[in-house]
Length: 370
Image (cartoon, rainbow, N blue to C red; front, side, top):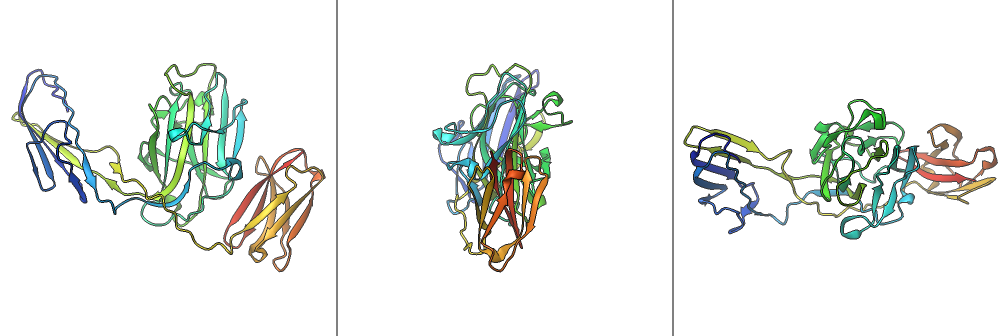
């Protein structure tokens, strides 16, 4: 808080409400409170000089049995090309899996280049969690250090892996987009995203309730413009780590300030408040009916084979090119068909996706034709 008057303010009183299921940690406050009465903590300050600024911090202990619930998680430690793929829209940069994560763990990184670039990383298959429960949300850690506004990135969500929707600022519950992104970089009007300097890893949470009852794909797109980069110290670009889908729980309070001059101002924490950490436990259910298949050889030249498992779940197989155009389709024999032979000599060299659709879900795998 700050006294913006040109004269001193007297009899200043600050009160804050301790959230339910939390208790004040004695001795943790940067300024000793005048009183702690139940869930109310109070500071009485005799006088504040003109333009004086005062910051008060304190700690609370939370109930160890209360936490946000994890529905799905990807720590990005395994070979990400098994579940993610890259898309190059302009320039020569791609997302990479490097040891740039929290505590030097593996993470996805987009480099800020001295060039004009536009590239994305996206899920080949939807996250293995139906969006159920209270306010299903994506939760991830990231850090960014880019030229402000001209370079940066943003998140998109899809139901089918083909049509992507950007999230609006109102969808974010914690540390949402902090900047406009230049039209020169993405050629998208009124675009918001992450740009500038996060000063280390920060958590972000976005509400996915508009897709409740469904499974979704995620895509992260990053771009740079011209030959300028951030002059701030540290690694340049955008790094993503520890993705989760959660049912979040937040603690929030409203602090009030009064004074002998009649001031009475109350303010809640920014956004929804403080996120309670997730339990990192994902429920495991039997997957005997899950769509399973593999493609070999891969890369392929003249012939490729698709091996099917749990065949009673299959209905159709499509092969699409990198633009999403369907170039091959066949109805599957659900009774006993186990292997499909594909004459790939008719395809141009490049990257394709084999998609198997079942009664309740679909799965994709990448196929490279040489």
